[in-house]
Length: 421
Image 1: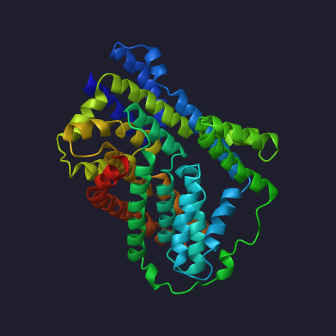
Image 2: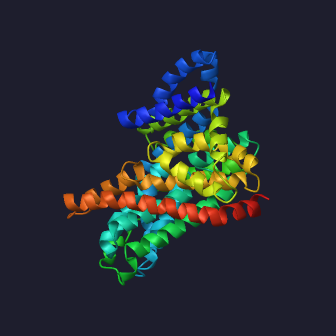
Image 3: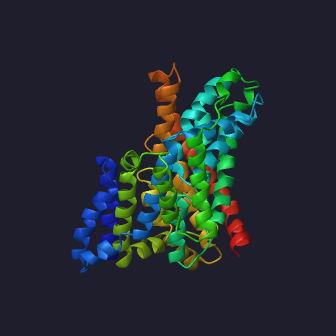
């Protein structure tokens, strides 16, 4: 039964990838059949749909759709970059920081991906840096920033870890992920010869002259309000986000109807549907079977790189947030227990890193939006350059996974032991 359940799950992922369909919807359909095969009930499947995860995802995405509708986040990112002035070497650092902050203050990677690549490519065209390099460095920043505790990714991983009896994992994962993305950004800077750019070509293109308007300031305050409710009043982050979003709607800062329509419902259905099927797979032993299989080929030294690369490969055909994290994070405590001498949070950090970095392939959201940003912002982006960038994205994804393997093998376990005890 455990093998059949695992094969059903793999089939759902493969079919949804090749048919370009939502894996969450297919997972629920297959789950309805699977509960009958495994002598379970529809209540088991429905019960596996996480109401707490829905609250978190719906609340956070609604709030940031509302904030985004005012243009506040985009202007914030531009101002961060403008702080670099004419110090050209600061520009890539500013782009990384912009990605980190925009993702890390709450929205996570997906909303930030809608903002950062376009800004990065525009900045590159003004400074003389390679536009693909700048887009990827910006995405490195948001990949690290997505691991703060207040993002959807942070909420998901925190919930999974709590289910395994591990608390406060996000600071360790954030430090580990930031380390890899900084190393990867430096490697990108070297590969694309960013060191050859000595001065800004057109400083005026970088100046964000307009100040925040009243609506934008209130929108940014709503994010602060969410954090205050979360930290000082212990309000569930999803409910805190609903409170902040409602404030924006009541004050007329954003339109509630338009914001609800603009929410990424496909992503929410993806996460909930796949999570429900995984609950059934776990109930019949499928997750334990996969954990034991991975454990059998691992040592305490190779565990983190193997988990990172495995997460990266799975992320190439599925969503990190919707599939990779909820599938592989629960395996980490079991694998760590089986191996000994490896910290489960080090394995979780490796999954978090690998699942993100492979997302820069052109088949994934990060790579696709980088290409789209280049096509929209570069006048001379012809078919030849598009094909070249397409191939480069695959190569850079492979480089990112290699860096993940090396850095995680050397540093993740010591970081986890130091920070988690």
